[in-house]
Length: 126
Image (tube, rainbow, N blue to C red; front, side, top):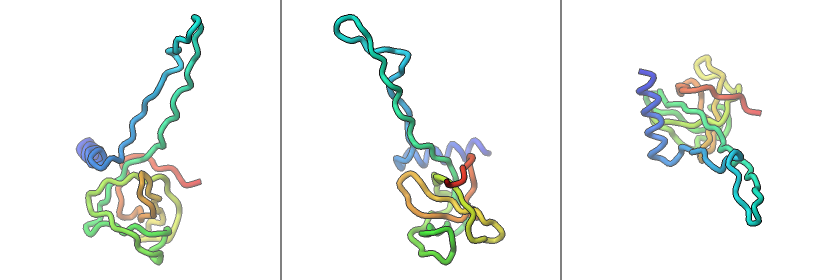
């Protein structure tokens, strides 16, 4: 079941353009230079890591400006929607869960962890 959920989340993100791919030159393969010398290229910078989560609340989950239900609603993620939280922090308790996720991958705002299922480890915000 977990593989199906992960595959569905990846497929949903692939369709929305959220997935990132890593690539670039390798320092192990130097670039030939005129005159017989070679220069090594620096490895490409790694893309920002995004962690996968899925909305599990029947009515979806509100995206808030801050990690509080008193904060302004700025959007709604429907049930089943894949999300890519950037990090988590302690905020207002929602049904006993004080964790909130800061959205990444082009979305701004916070969602309560009470209504989101992790599909991977999400670090604390710095």
